[in-house]
Image: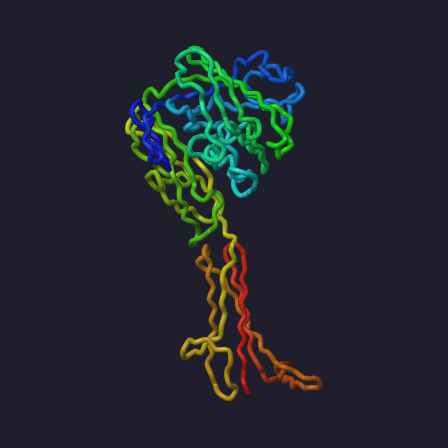
Length: 429
């Protein structure tokens, strides 16, 4: 959890105090594409189609499904990048327009693998729509991508003055399904060349993916962006926030009927805003208050966790995620023969004495409080070649001397997972 205060006097970030201000760039739809596009190879210079801001292109032809939009002009919370006025570092991203589903198979960040939903868990800042499993992680201060690759920076923060500036991203970690590429890692980073005019911003980026950066099959292709937006400093109270699920959104059922899940709010306050409250909801019902909380998520199905941050003057920010609790562990089962008088476990009895023997069946499961059990007792008789077994005509059952009894047990939990155990009681003659 971090709370960052942004004002003309104080900036508090993870225990560090700095004097700072904030600079916001709020991205809007690209209604006036640059023509010609300033492509470095002089081949891919055709303008974007109005309304689109991203494409992958090679030899003058769009690839990867053509042009995409990364900005939703109708979004309630516009896509916004916030920079520190002193360091120029990107300090948060808010309002990504198209989030992937929590169940999409995406690598965790940093690196390749399917252990977590990288885009979903790690604050995407550019996601082409409608492809919800393709996008770039936001390398802001304190994020996984920022910690690993370095934080994106802006070259100047006095954007009230017309002129040029640049945004430098050390690595634009690109996720596609369960694959990953790292544009910028071998080419000195990805640069957005920008112009500000009377508060309006226009930025372009043109970067060719190197073979050393590619694990997807995109080597040689050009990433191109044509972004439009507006800029302002932190004027007036505002709050930005996103939630973090500690341990991830795919959970193992660790207590009866669910799991205790720790969540935290990452909050940016600016323009003199003061934090009023942080509220947590599970499937729409109030669940907890505070910057951090422990929520009980029931076993079975997907549950929605919502967070709402409110300032003392009424500004709000919200975030949402889905959490699923599964039961992948089998129950434990112990079966035994017990002396009925002492409840001590026994494995043999004398045939010459009458003895009361108790059957013990103990089944436990972390998630299911009452796993179902079933036990069978089977007599064991050691037969020899040529031996004659007497059959009672009236009952059609053999008359044999039992040498031992075998106890077989099965326990099944609510997820259908089964455990087996057995015990043997020898009869000594």
